[in-house]
Length: 116
Image (cartoon, rainbow, N blue to C red; front, side, top):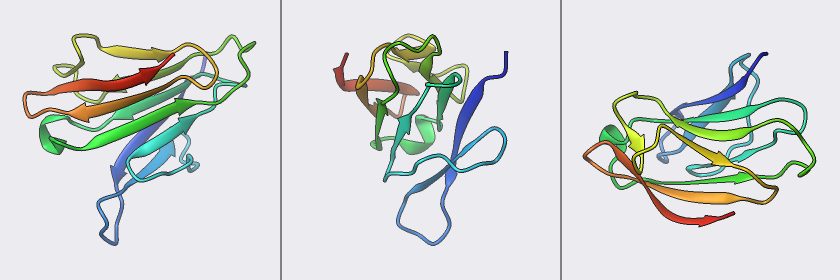
């Protein structure tokens, strides 16, 4: 199974934003430190940047696809030593589910709020 992953890199031109792209290089929807995941036709995975290098930054992630889909929408950490409040993966399991994550200097992504 091919997984459609989304990676983040610092965007050029200032502003502190991120350029998001799928594994095949096609652009993903971009918001200021946020992303919309659409897993209607394939798995959608967003890879967070390093929490240690981005302490204090906030990311918003929302799933928008049809709830009848069998594909997953997940948030993962770029560094295997970092976690999302102790877990390596955060799954958005329903349509309109969203999570707000805050990077901590200790390498933890903290869940500030979530809608499941």
